[in-house]
Image 1 (cartoon, rainbow, N blue to C red):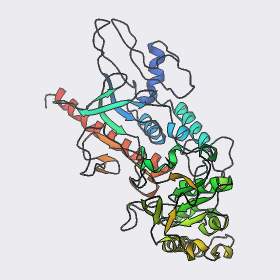
Image 2 (image 1 turned 180 degrees about the vertical axis):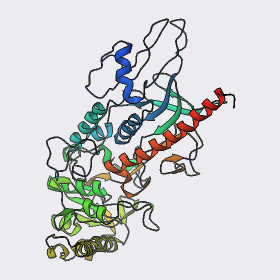
Image 3 (image 1 turned 120 degrees about the horizontal axis):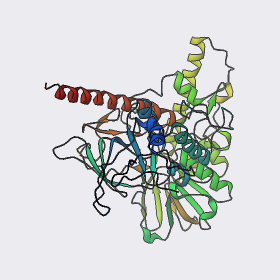
Image 4 (image 1 turned 90 degrees about the vertical axis):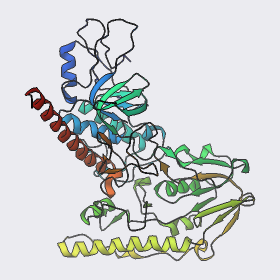
Length: 480
């Protein structure tokens, strides 16, 4: 594939202009008139370079108004909003568009929301019914197609290594694997799910096969034997269920969680969370740093029922606490965690019923949704200790979340714990923005549709700041 950025040298009239590039999308290098047309989406020119007089002279920095780091769902959404406002920008991605959806997920993963809901407003998922749940590959293809459709100025295969404020000048110097970039504004659209977290519980010398859920692909990759899955959110539940159905004994460590119904009275839970205003919650429940949601889009979508999982043969255990001499220990909280999840489930049914009545909706009643099976033996007689060798456990899958890595962003935009200081993505460091963070503006911020709306707010703020800059420059020209 030709280099999508045309370098300018000598007296040539061509310029280094970003054109739309996504996986397997051909790039045509045209004359200046054609390049102006291609770059129109990004605001006249996506980027520019100053000419150099000698071929071997240091490459001057690329110049753009906004540099977006990352071309996942956040970066693509950001590009659309900037482009629609005529803001000159460039998106850099170290891998491919939507790479995490391609290679950071297990083979059978399906999105947790139906495609009528979990998408950008500008395009539907092709060849899928509205209530279907897209596979990971369909999601990746969707974002690649969306980026092509909007003409997003994306450069793949370029890693950003550092961002520093320009000394004595406006904007930031960005170092990349393809040379420096000068940008007035930088949007960190890499999200919060960057590096998998495996708690330091079981030492490597214990002789167990330990992987994070982001490295799990299918049961066949695991050595023979039973499997302990730690974490019972969407990932842990789906992985545990898949491994058990392959014929393995599975132990599932269940912590605190919310357990919404997949659907109720003919409407998916994403619809209920919308009409009940729960997507717009600004902060997690009091005392909770993170809300684990046990919901699944696998096999056409279903309500996660831990009693049903236990009946299928999965042995439920409490929250994993420690490991010593081959024995894993669990907290005495399994019953509490499951009961609290039930309370969350039933309370949503109560709110849904009240909403139906108060709004006079004709939705069929569903009394069976309130029936809960008896507690399984794993709840009534919980395991507090598990001899892993004795139980035949050879693998542990840690579905224990991620941490962000902003070590490349060397600006004053973080608190003492290294977390971004921001308000709805607008950083404490002027000119720096974040996108794709959990609870960035609301509960829905981590979802496909939520990040799109957050990107609009960030783009608005950048546009306002640009208007102030334009006013200042005009005043200076008038001698004011």
